[in-house]
Image (cartoon, rainbow, N blue to C red; front, side):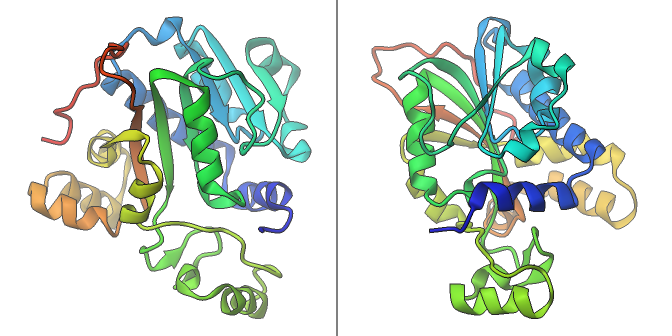
Length: 265
């Protein structure tokens, strides 16, 4: 069991997430949803799981008929302004026990959350439960195979056994315990068996390449235009997964979205 995961998450989140950085993530999610989910989002209800201070939640609000932000941490949610609350229904709750009815939301945002909860399988089960048939998820999260653990910026940290990882972060003054738990691409796909997975990393890179400078811009350009087989190979080592998940359902229930499937050409 991860110790005080919600409170620890907000401390780490605010340590490396500036307001501008959160808005950039909001733009990435906005672009992905509007580009690849052509299904009239304006009539849908969206749930942002792990909304924290609600910056991304409020940014995405105009896309939907109704926007809900959920987080467990009272410190993060304490930063939500009265103006934000006028537009978004914020609620405090546990991501592993979502306080919503079955099949009650159309879209879920799950960005940089799965690695922070004690039981990510329970998290995904809850997301699947509250989603309507053919509901969609914007999912992003870290890749265990990437050599740098991005929350603490330490090499190979996530590859170590828990006891060694705790000693590592403590020795280097990064905290008293390492509690983030990430998965590899193959492992993550297994626990997301209730969803069809569409990798949107490449089109996101293409969209943002003009905003990058120096070596980062060059790397974005190379990867965005590389042959398909190289993209699939590199996907196993990418620092962060960016996926659209579509809830599987009985074939008699038609999809309410037109998901563009040629974005990785």
